Length: 548
Ligand code: GLC
Ligand code: CA
Image (tube, rainbow, N blue to C red):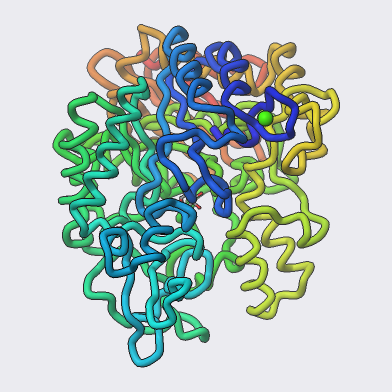
């Protein structure tokens, strides 16, 4: 959940904690069991809360600590766990630690950050931050000193090498457990350990910088830190933890998610890595829309990789990515049918399914008419970069429109009243004009809506007859060589479930496996004929069959 854009309870245009509490019945009716809330700590919001200035207090835009305790309490009553965002790779430059470090860089708090002397008048190395600039900035007030920030310059990286700062973080984590939260989503989890000493890397663009990547062979020492954090905090609290780990080596997966791994799960980014690696990838402006075959390959690969190890967390949307329908489905084919197909794949795959607010009603990307409309710091940087790369303004804006993080951050569309029922005031961010058509109220009232389809899928996952198989059952491919088709079985010794998606506009015939079949889910209202073993699937049709 992206709290700024979920629901505004006090009419200041910004979503808040009471706003979430107000909607708990809605969330319960959807069937979810856990909410990961993006950061709600005190923050100057340079990176929308991922720049924390005080870990112990809720930012006033979201309410106060009591509102958080109330949300935890009310959620618990409805069987919903609350998971907070743990942003400990970096904090805000407004955090008292960094303020003190600036006053006395050689003292106690200087050691809380990576502060280094200049080298021949330059920064210690040539790393580029994730928002495109030098990852080293001059420490204000100290001309010969630099500090490291892998994200914005207002987000200084915390020095995990220092045991004292680790203790401070563990204390804070425990403090939140004592308040009743059930776990954490761990932001930028694989970045907390840097490759030392800081080294100049071969430049990867004309600016002479190199984007710091987590080394392919797992960063020496990273897992010691993650294990220590688990032992000191998560373990004793029986917490659920899910890490943001964008890429990892296959053999390292068990270090993350096996029983002895450092986390309960990590997010599976593979659907979003499509087209972002390899020779012709040259930054976000060179992304291409994933094809159905690429989608299938990524999905099957993840389940193969993780099945004997643990659970990856599956998602098709989050606050850093475009809306799934806009991203995975060709524009002319975006419809409730194709959205339902994506929903089925998201929820039936082996792993822990996460939904992102608004996905359940099929919200779509925003359109941008000018660069002034960009809110996100990362998208501003990307826009500039695209222009530098020689794209004209119109093309650059089109890329932003496709990939901007603003796409999923526009307010939740509750109903067709003014401001989509999200707020009574001017919203902090643009509302997608399609809210008149796409909104919760309309879909709650319509039996065959996407929202009701999500509910059905979630109920199926929880159905005592199918739950074991859908959670623990092995995933094996079906018709893997077939183009524009995603098919897999989920099976165990009691049940065999077949998930089939005709991931294209045109209808096609498919040969079904032997056995007596029952349709559990169909995204078309017309019944399917299972009398013969050849079935005609319509465009973007999704079928979930129980096979005896
Ligand atoms: C994660 C967050 C993203 C944030 C970044 C820096 O990737 O999901 O929103 O900008 O970390 O904290
Ligand atoms: Ca508010």
